Image (cartoon, rainbow, N blue to C red):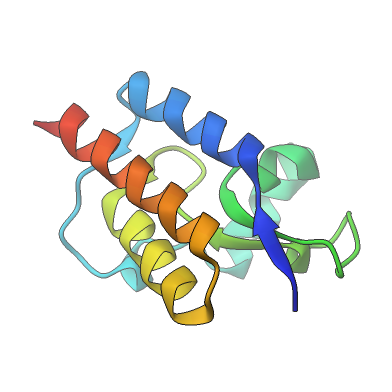
Length: 116
């Protein structure tokens, strides 16, 4: 599986952080990560491109109009979550995606600065 950095998602996340749309949560990402029902509800009202903006990874081996193409979610379709960025960073490091790990780390630093 070859996953690359979704640079459009990084740009989108930076804008959200700049606009104060953040959750500096201390919980576990599993408590905040949107499930399939939330993803499907989001997609009923939004384009796949907007869905993609909430994921730092892009798997080009998957179809363009499939949820499976987008990896490493970091928010809940409203806000950037601290624990989402931490989860993305840790999973990217474990799986050897250093560009995604670095981007998640940079976004995490921006979020923590904005939250301070």
